Length: 268
Image (cartoon, rainbow, N blue to C red):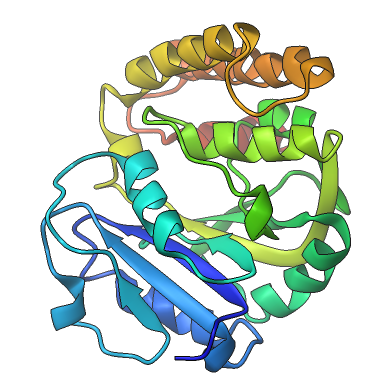
């Protein structure tokens, strides 16, 4: 395989059923497949190489079991050869042309983000952060409670932590190193709500609340690759997310998903 232009990181946990749609969306991302390396990192002990065969695919060795999304992404990052890195969860998809839209912006700015489209049973529920947005700020993470997914230069990729919301931590540290803002391309990362996912678990809100406090304490103690002038803003992201999380647990009707709750708050 030629040296790829972009490496796509996919952590896989019980993902045999959802990976085909994720991979199909990568093929429609606007780049020739010989410029894309997709690294599937198993975290369920399964050997995904026995089920998926494609010239753009590579795999981390199977074996680790429930190590967490952060360590799983780190195993894939250690193997990545591309000049740019992109992220896709195994149960999500990209809009057509995703990489073709974001890579030019990432080349000029070090990183770029797409909009987050939240879909419930395939039906659009939310487009975040806000109508008409062309830049993403640190404050958007706290105001919307959502995650946003960068395409970034390989040299900007740092290891993920091993706790809930590690993807948000990774993204806001990146954004802080870029001065607190980054271009927001007019394409979507499609976040498909999954009733079987870890975030749908009854105790997840409690676990993630504890993780937010750990993120705050670590960042204020000097951990992470964050400019000192940006640490307070980064910590505030998790304070704002924690406030939203408390509102959700206190006020949401039984059976209402977190993003349904956010949609209800943002609908006029």
